[in-house]
Amino acid sequence: MVARAALHHWEEPCLSGTPEDERGSGTVFFSGCSLRCCYCQNYPISQEGVGKAISAEHLAEIFLRLQRDGARNLNLVTATQYLPQVRAALDTAKAAGFLLPVVYNTGGYETVETVKTLEGYVDIWLTDFKYASPDLAARLSSVKDYPAVAEAALRQMLRQTGAPFFDSEGFLQRGVIVRHLALPGHVQDSQAVLRLLVRIQKETGVPFIPSLMSQFTPFYKAAENGLGRRITTYEYRQVIDEAIHLGLTDGYMQEKSSAREEYTPPFDLEGV
Image (cartoon, rainbow, N blue to C red):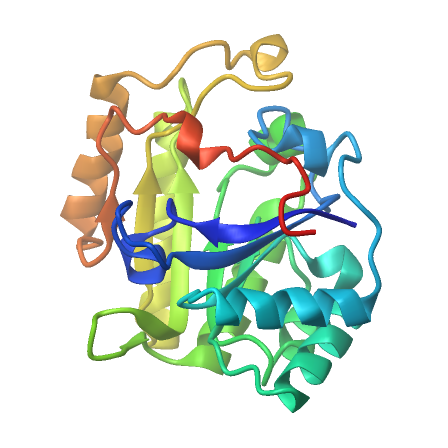
């Protein structure tokens, strides 16, 4: 099930360039998700089943079309529930001349076995690390074991990709980007996530690119779960200050005004 397949201009600059870049990231949004985040901005496809059923062969054709359209990479958003079909489509596309770096865009709730299965298929992991607190993970995403599962998955991602590698234009070709979305009222958990990420980096010896996000908007059932507002400037500044204190500065930090409609494209089956 796929909801959209098109060039996307709102990922980190090392993936999609500037918003004015005509090429962008060749993004395929899959329907469904292994998480149940009450604030998901993509809830029509992650929770409500919006999308179109296609074959693995058609998916391979989409990958090749995105390459012809000038995509800088292939960006697979929440694809794990279709892993066998995605791997088959990548095999078919590669046999037909597909050469783009493959980005695996995930909420971070992946088993180590899944990450290992994608070795040789995925060049760039674009993974979330949402929570340090199991109780918060259970309340907001229905997965109490999220911190432990996400940590094990991230360690395996780092083993498989190694340090970030960029091309001559500054676009990422291999490596791991770790996103963290700061949530209103939960600054302490965000700070705990940053401390955990620093520990993982030190213990693995493999650098990654941190991406700290301020774009939270109370979508879906957020307000029902105590998340009925955007994060304040003061809250986000506390998260940024902790990142700077910990040395997590070689990456991305959003402007406080970054909650934009462009981050949530219309799931209108474009390109499917």
